[in-house]
Length: 360
Image (cartoon, rainbow, N blue to C red; front, side):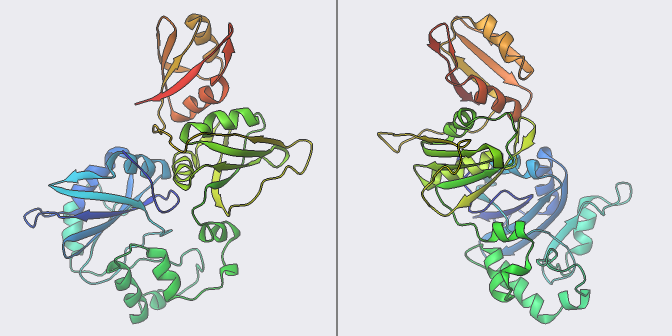
């Protein structure tokens, strides 16, 4: 399933459900059962508008939100279609706004109330989305519940373009310099075919970066600044960069968690003798991308038994199946799979280069 999103991964998901039958009473319990299989849920907020129903689902962990979106985006719900975006909200604070329904599972009592009773008790209440929690922690509750604030929230709920952060920024003029530097970087991002990746482990080489990022698109250039633990990667197309960013952002790559940002398109130039700079050429822009997976198929293997032993020196496999000239691996995690891809892609053994394929 194609998992392109307009925004960087976030633990809050924005659900847009189209053409739900009027006979189907969508509620928080249904969404909780649907999404809770991917991880603990903090909060759910549902609001309806005509034939389109929208909801926010906030997970406790980012990885749960990413996995849920990958599995459920575009799925069929009672004959309707559910589209899932990463929300731009940084916090989902349920307070009071008319005609909305929300459940805070972090506050729910496990032995006195179930999610249905909580839902029914809040149906006639108001719900407030605190969009400015990272700007000021001292803003008074009275200010957040003002008519101006409620109007801004209603504009969000009635928006056609689903751009929650844009609506917020238009409604509340802010000097971007007031934000934390990390938040400034996120707000300034525009989709681009150039990515900046930071926080690489010291063991990483330029070839390892190529092995991993080339699984998601045709690379044109890599500039790896090892001394700064960062790299710039230029893809052939914006879509290829988007896919790579979604699958690899915040993932554990050896002993570090890498972060990925879109960068304005620019020429790449090494600035020191330690920098690794590589250029690649491709005859076509077509690229068949496979989702990131813990299942790997390694082909062109001359001695599967020996190679499988070498592989387990880098990461322990959950299951290994040896073929005549192939190895089918099931790793314990996607992070372990990335280690194998990084080290063994194009690995030459007995005059034969091995090939690694992501399998579902």
